[in-house]
Image (tube, rainbow, N blue to C red; front, side, top):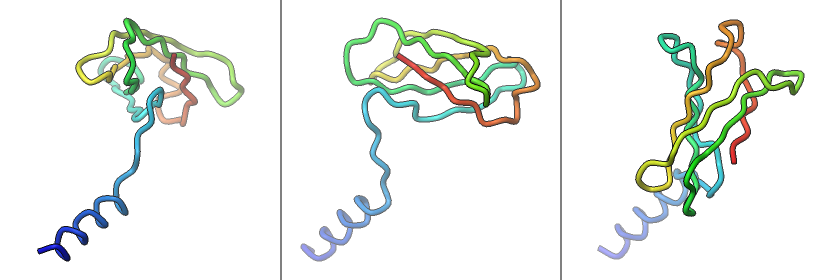
Length: 94
């Protein structure tokens, strides 16, 4: 039984990715809303999260804000121009 438990713990450590406080954990584009939806995690007491999306030249192209839900996770909707829908955008949140 101990060997099985050690193997399970080792497997979980090996294949899990840590999430750090203050990190953008996911980005997805929703064509219905024309928005980039950013998932941001922060374990502190935040009343509001503000995010800005930047194009490849580093210029801001959109921003949004949201209040964190339970567990310190906020889902921020950022309206962006349609031409950026299929591009990798840099997102900064605070």
